[in-house]
Amino acid sequence: MSATQPEKIVLPTRRLDAGQVELLRSLKPGDRIKVVQTIRVGSRKWEAIADGVFRAIAYLETGVTTDRVKEDDLVVPVVRFTKPNGELTSISIDEHTKVTKQ
Image 1 (cartoon, rainbow, N blue to C red):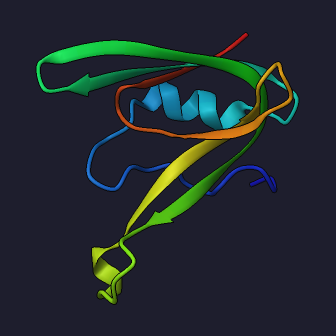
Image 2: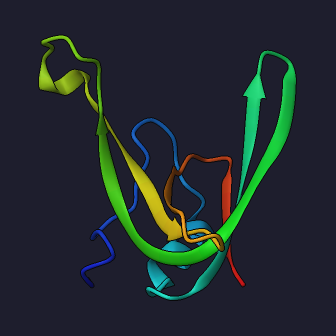
């Protein structure tokens, strides 16, 4: 396991495609990537596309700002990358996210 890769890449409630997991684990800092996410609100769906230079994969712990039990928190994988304009960004991965190596 490298410093940029967690040992496992898993979603909190769904399964991530095995091919997508393999691709994510193969990424190295500096690789050019394209990220396509399907956004759905009600019955409407559309794609959001971003590209840039891969930096790392990490996990983001989510939760609300009230005092809750730890089991209620979700931990989601995120891809960290740099956009062509130099902006550092990250996108949380779900089963509808497709990352490709460019």
